[in-house]
Image (cartoon, rainbow, N blue to C red; front, side, top):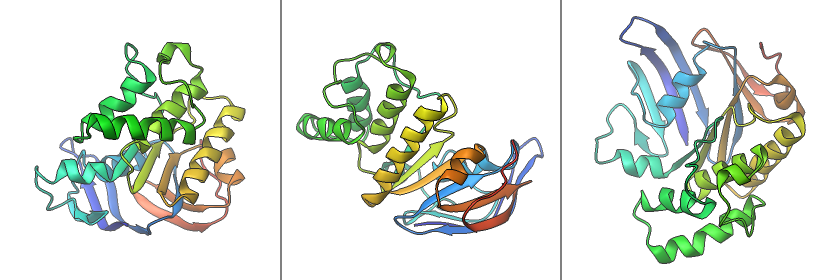
Length: 227
């Protein structure tokens, strides 16, 4: 469960990024978070991943209050949220297997758990048998699938995808979104942050529209997303 209640965020330079944002995302939902550049989407991502805390209001992430969370609790909260980045952020000198294993070791997984989990997740994202490949031996779409596998490898409750198709052509973009839809069908909450109206309109999902730090639309169907 994700719940933002009257959330405000003002940065040290005086920028008021969020102005009383409120919305709730139930477990198992698939939601697009959309809006033009500078609307506040990036700030919301940082709140959802614990990178920043709100100036006012309340942010609840999978049972953790981000206003009251302690340093000791943050690693446990982050285990419940997998993040997919637009630029993949894979380690070039490590194999696909080692990129995923690193994410698992970061949360204390044993070697036995790692050996059991990685093949399953790679099969799920359509990369079975590619454990020994390096990122530069993969296409852009395959690298994004590795990034999705890394986000899934610790079995999080929620996936937050930040412009996950921004570096891909339309066909690969559709494949990635279809994969995220499939992951959602298995029970994982999926939040896709994007400004690509074509993708948003292709999938009949809930859309939360952000403009100038405020929610200006929230419902099923399509939205005219500003480029």
